Length: 352
Image 1 (cartoon, rainbow, N blue to C red):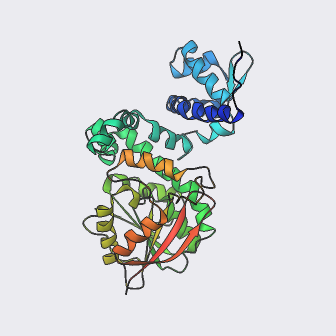
Image 2: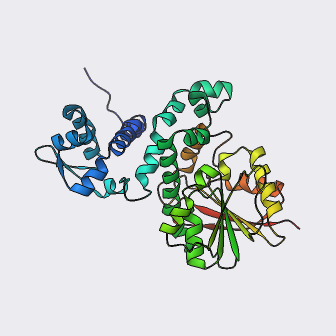
């Protein structure tokens, strides 16, 4: 009996698919270890035996071992003889007790409420519902407001994304030409803090009240003078405050469908002086002939699915789509600036 040899290309294709299909196992192991505080423990106290980790996390050693061993195989942890585990460069990035980190981002993306949304994705594709809302009975922002842990993780996850991308942005985009910059939907103020400290301009942080509650303390921790950034709370669909000659929005407008986005942009236009600018900070879904992976490894076209599963009309757009959206709202594209992360800037001026 003879067997037909398997082509190298077929093997490689199967390897790619196995990795994709089993990706949820990897992410769940990361989430579970982050939620249990294992990455914090190993960084703070050094390498630990399986039994020690299990005792300190109130888990069963033989069950926990499978998770820790898998993380070691992924180089997230290091396994030593005697079932001893130690931290690595990857696990240090997932520590959550030293400020906003990739650990917060992982916990937000993979937490049960988000996971439940993926369970109903097929049904939601038929009905047109937002999967997160179908699974949880409310929108993601309301859910985070009603659930303290989820809300805290969400805010820290967004702060991590800001910290991850902002330094690369500051190296290629000059905010010093503006007198006052307003960050719309700016979370705790990570972006506006960096802008005012580096470029010496004044800042305004505009957010919903429950998110802005922690902003004053966060800005103080960042060494921002209390008079440098004004914190204003409100609703982007009602009115955006005047007083800035530049508005920045980082990943914010992608949470809304085109109709809602245009309402927000209309209010931005009303708030800006004639010479004012609006700077969209965003990861752009590539067109067919553009690279599919950003310099930092993010695939915007894949991440866009996560956004769309979580929020109404959400989903990252192509540069062309964003340009058309802003032009319909009374703006004209003046420049595009790319960075060494997934974040790029599109600067728009008001149409005369």
